[in-house]
Image (tube, rainbow, N blue to C red):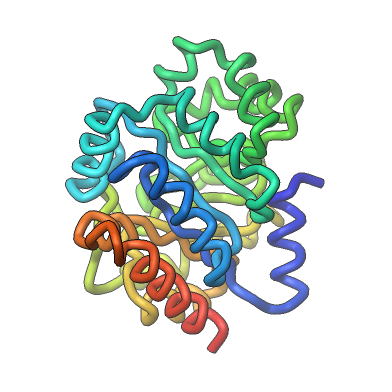
Length: 265
């Protein structure tokens, strides 16, 4: 059983919703990223999705696109992110999931990347532009290095394809709550509830909802709808970019603690 599976099983036994913040590595710099990772862990995050900046982020909205641009300008690279995680692997006890596009991994060498990622404590991968038709073979490679390749389901995904994805994904199923890119929303679409129920009927894979979750009210809503996890991205990234260097750690920690409290109430 993978670390991600163990975490979701542990939370299910406690009837708790997984809180999964997303942040972009290297925004504003890697030193602050390292401190934020530890702060999120200390303030109730169960898993963390860590973005690797990329020049053509197809699935990301303006907030995360700008974050990736800032990270690239600060000199962040795939290898530097892995080097950062290597320095933290003895202190980070929760699963770390890397969000990255496929081209950088293909250029580096997928097996070589998975080997190195596993050694620095990574538990899973999310690759939004990896076609389902190619996912199985790459998932097998990732699994050989104890990494879960997590697949995404969108509201527009046909039922038969949704069935295949939910059975092929490892760790959990990432349910995209909206049609479009990442970003904060005022409201979550009610159809997310039916999608969660549908996925639960198809497979035993935990379901984590992302894209648009930005408030404690949203966290409570997806918990009521039966989700196993809430992925909060743009709301964290926005706070990081808007905070001063001497307050960013505390502000991000406080926001994470508020999301944790909402999930537990």
